Length: 274
Image (cartoon, rainbow, N blue to C red; front, side, top):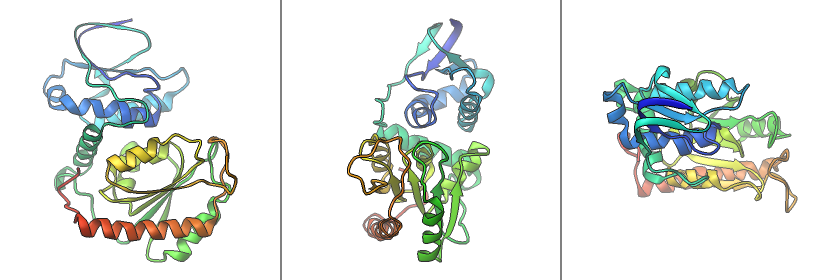
């Protein structure tokens, strides 16, 4: 049990897992971020990672630091907390991110990463297709073939494999400048929260997988498609995938065309993050 004077509580079930923290818990802070920045005596209570999950603690600290919340203000709780004043921002249902809060989070993150340009990422020399790589559950058995096909059919793009390592700000900056995201179902897709409006997102995952990334993409106003990852009608979500490479290429091409249509109907404004 912890005791403190004032605390904002954003702890919720599975709240230390990357997707759930970034997409469901962290956006809740945006409702009162100004108050937190101005009142350094207010702590922030988050879901405690399981023993041995040091990487979870690291990215929680790093993401909160981007919002101006330093590590000494963070409290990890497992059961209960006692405080003179406890503030509980509106909670987020599992897999159903709040539209306003998640877009406010994108704006805050971009402004934190690019303060000199008010949140506008720099222009990259060539458009980037981010290919998320997983090495365990839901990994692509033919990842190398997918990568080479993307290189062949989109020669004007750089293909960058994302391994989910390194400082969080560097990971976010990659997605903030992405022109396309291709990824198996998994936490790496959560980083689309930093991507610009109308970013094409291709998720590869069984129909048995949660639709959480579909909901996230739509609420961030991205252009989204999903490949089932296999020719089998029903495949367990945690399976390894081997999508037809030609189908992946066709879907990416279709997403890029859809982005052009979306941009024509709603021209991107570099100062509008949502």
